[in-house]
Every structure is written in structure tokens, then in C-alpha cells.
Length: 200
Image (cartoon, rainbow, N blue to C red; front, side, top):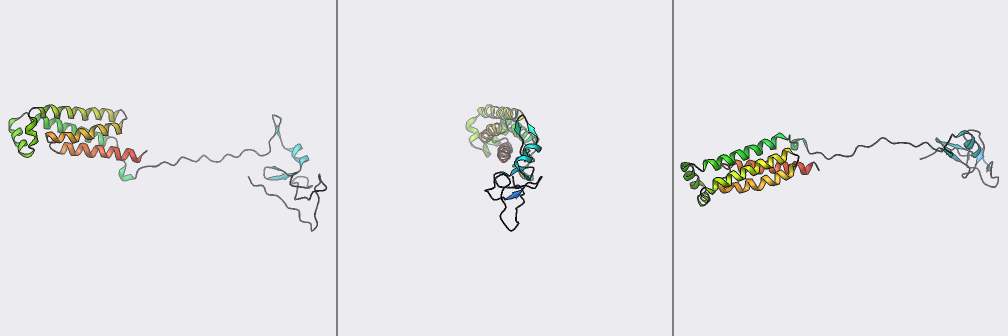
């Protein structure tokens, strides 16, 4: 804290009122006595001599209150927010997860149809090696994504994204929910991970 002091300049050295052997550096703001640096008592931006300081400054619990504390305005913590174009409402990833799960389960059910199975094997040859296990795999993966969606609603967004991401990739073994389900699941997972990372 800086105090404004009045410097004595009378053309000749003045001595302190209390210490005649010491030069005065300022005058008391109340009584005008010349005082040295050791006698100057700062109070509310003023320089007081010891007498004025002891008689005029209020005492609190036996201690002299020299300078009342100054409290600065609280500074709000700096928040790092994501850019506006990356701000995502909670329902967008949730809707995408639900659509991905539905497409993957529907793809698994469609594999039970012999006509669809033959057409699908023509596009994705590895589906033929799975046989009816493709239906089981697709159903399990769809349920895993639904479980991830539940975690998402419970507040574990990043955990849900890391659960749904590999499930969407593995769904490519049965055709990936007509490919769209895998793509939607992967993109929604990356969206959640990326936006949560920016908000840390």
C-alpha cells in the first residue's frame, strides 16, 4: 500500500520533533509536527506523528488498527469454453447413439431372412462365415450401445463414448447396421469425446 507523504523542504534541514538528532522527512498530517521516518505512522493514507496516532486512531481488542484491510473485487476464474460451433446439446449424441443401436439391431434381425442374407453376403463376404451367429452378435452389440446410452444419461458421457465406439466398429462384421449404424455410432462417440475434452 502506498502512502502519500509530504516532504519537508524549508531550505535547511529540519529535525524530528521527537528525535532532535534525526532529520525530519515529513510533517504530521494532523498537528503539523516535523517527524522522521521512524516516527511517521501511516493511517488511511496519512502520515501521523506518534501522539496523534495513539490518541486518534481507534483501538480494537487492545491492538491498534493502523490500516483497515482493503478487499479487492473477487476475480472470476477463467473458464475455457468450447467454440460455439462445437457446443453440442446433450440430446444430439443421445439421439445418434439410439439410431446407431436401432440400425445395428435391425441389421441383425434382417440377417434371419434368407433372401437378405444372400444379398448381404454378396456385399460383405465375411458375413457368410458368421451364419446365424451374426444375428446374435448384432443383437449383443445393439444392447451394448443401449447400455452406453444409459451411462450417457447417468452422466458418464466419456465412458459411454468409449463403450459405444468399439461396439460400432465391431458391428461391421455383420454389415455395420447397414453401414450407417457403424458410421453414426463412431461419429457420435468422437463428438462426445472431443467436446468433453474441450470442456475440461
